[in-house]
Amino acid sequence: MKVLKYVSSYWRDIFLQASGNTIAQVVGVLGIPLLSRLYAPQEFAVQNIFLQLVMFFAGIMTWRYEYFFQMLKNDQQARWLFSGVVKLGLVTGVVFTVLLYAFSAEIARLLSVEQGADYLIVAPLSALLVSLALAFQHNAQRSGAYKISAMSEVFGKSAYVASGALLAAVTTSGLIFTTLFSALGKIGALLPYSKNLIHGACAHAPDAVSPLKKHASGASALVMSHILVTVSSAAPIFYISAKYGTEILGQFSMVMATIFLPSGLIGAAIGQVFYQRAALHAEEPLVLKGLWTMTIRKLVLFGVPIYLCAGILSPWIYPLVLGGQWHDAGLYAQVLMVAALSAFVSTPLDRVSLVLRYNWYLPALHVFRLMSTGLLLALAIHFALDFKDFLLFYVVQMSAVYLLDLLFAHFLIGHAVGKGAAAMKEV
Image (tube, rainbow, N blue to C red; front, side):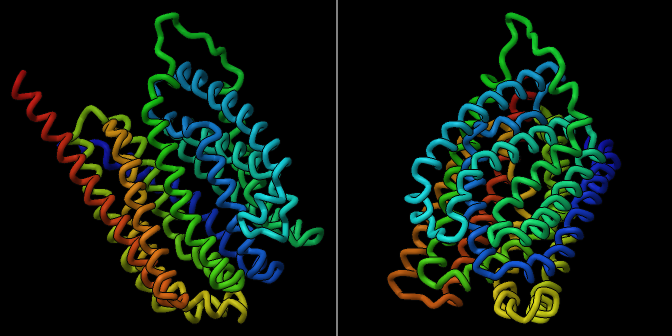
């Protein structure tokens, strides 16, 4: 089968990217005991809420065009797309910054942020830097430069930990700035490789189709999906803060930041390389199906033992590594382990619909996710669930969405293979 031709380089690139992710996560893991002693659980709760705001802005400021570098055919199109990303980001960034400055007090109350409310104004700048870092990284991956891409992950995570530790000496809101410095770290690593993207001529043939126009439908689908995901992800966080308090939200936030580490270490590397290869073979459904099936098997092989061990050991690991104040986080991790495993297997392959240009799919999936989140919160309010019961239902809801996504990806690939076979018969 043709897919076997690409297996060696496929797993080599995954190894390169995973190596960088691994070192980055090691830096992050070593930094967590330090940061958890410099900042209280309530400050991690504020950071989590701030991060939701940053990620929301990052999803709409550049209209998610940074995710389409992988699908471009040459450097000229990449420069053209990058120019559009920068212009969009600067214009929308200024607008959002002015709005936050004008309504910072009202927005802080809406988000239940008291401590660090004055720093909300840096959210648009943080979001723009996150988007630019992703643009540089996807462009590097488009050219197969996974060593540079991996290095950027290490620089980003190192900047995250270092900035959090240094800022603790001057402000209790230092965690808010870690996302900004993390993005700067990634950009710093990728900048030398991206000179042609920045300084190259942006001229184009008169009859050439702009990559912004060509991928407008896919970008719109990503933005709509992002908004839906942001709302469905943020709603439980705000509910936990309002109903159970910032102490519990801080414990929950720490678990969410750590139990998904394998996804960032192995799953993200597999997902990045899979997307690049899938984009190359979008017109060859059989090759795509082979890559998808092979990747699923590896994800399950890696994921099950990792999360089984995490579920068994977390009640002892969290207080041992982070300090006695994080005892409850270890208990929450045992429950969230199921959702984390589902995410580990499903998330790396979530761009199949983009590659196959089923642009309706992601918004439809996330409408379902938002509806199921709404149902979860309605049940929690109606039955006045305590936090442990709420967490159990939350894990069931998350896992169901991830597994449903996996099933539909299998269906979409099968449909593409069927269409390809029918076209061959007609020929």
